[in-house]
Amino acid sequence: MQTDRVIHVVSAHAEGEVGNVITGGVAPPPGDTLWQQRDFLARDGSLRRLMLNEPRGGVFTHVDLLVPPRDPRAAMGFLIMEPEHTPPMSGSNTICVATVCLETGIVPIAGDETRFQLEAPAGLIEIVADTRGGRVNAIEIANVASFADRLGAALEVAGLGTLTVDTAYGGDSFVIADAAALGLALTPDEARDIATLGARITAAANAQLGFSHPREDWGHISFCQFAGPLRRDGATLSGANAVVIDPGKIDRSPCGTGCSARMAVLAARGEMKPGETYAARSLIGGRFDGRFTAAAPVGDRPAIAPRIRGRAWLTGTHQVMRDPADPWPEGYRLSDTWPILPQG
Ligand SMILES: O=C(O)[C@H]1NCC[C@@H]1O
Image (cartoon, rainbow, N blue to C red; front, top):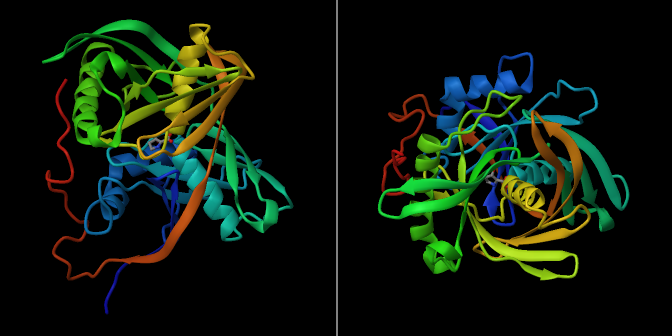
């Protein structure tokens, strides 16, 4: 056996969404900040290709690289690699990273509730872990400030006509479309149609609406969220969503950044108040519970400070290798499983 890489991975999923965590074997990328390290990973692409492409990954894979934090308040830093993007923040990935850190002893479990901070490119993320019984039962994350960008914007999508959509930021950027208005019930049998439609709506939203974070260098819309109808039961809103991740796969979890973006829109419309709960369901029945408090405005946008609670489970440990004789040293993609990004 020959190999010129040995990368140690603890794999996990959060409410169904894969988040494999690199715990060793990769030196921290160059950069003074996690944002600059994020930039390097995106620009360089070699680790992304090795870990995300077949035969080591696939379009359903997300990979998180543990790095030393730059903020002394954080126990660990992490950089997120998604199929197309290298985002500032991700709910499901943060829940996987926090769970892996605790379950492998990187961060010690401290009684029934373990609190610590992780550093993502978008900033510090407070973690409150339910660690009753010496294991991780649930993770609550305090996400970065989230805000609605455009409410009720008109969007032309070829073959669909004019849709009314919202755009919002919840640690990553979203165009949010009403599922019922598009005839979608958000059931698993619709998955392929939702994935194709969502990729087209994201492309159209980038071409026609765009997005520019007032403080960060984040200037595109990453995801399309199909928002299902909400039911109110006292102070709890519940409903399904489907988030389509570029280049056209559906989040198996209810998407933490998506729940944050949706709560920002609901707050902007006066339809959800601080202290209320949003119980979000994904297509496979994964559940995140969201709530928020008010936050300082981001630029001129009123913002919320969301908290998302969910669960993750470990699925294995791997040593990823690369044989120097392998004719596809960084793997490959074919459009049978790796969709081609549509043009807006
Ligand atoms: O939970 C989230 O925020 C995410 N899940 C995969 C894609 C998004 O980053």
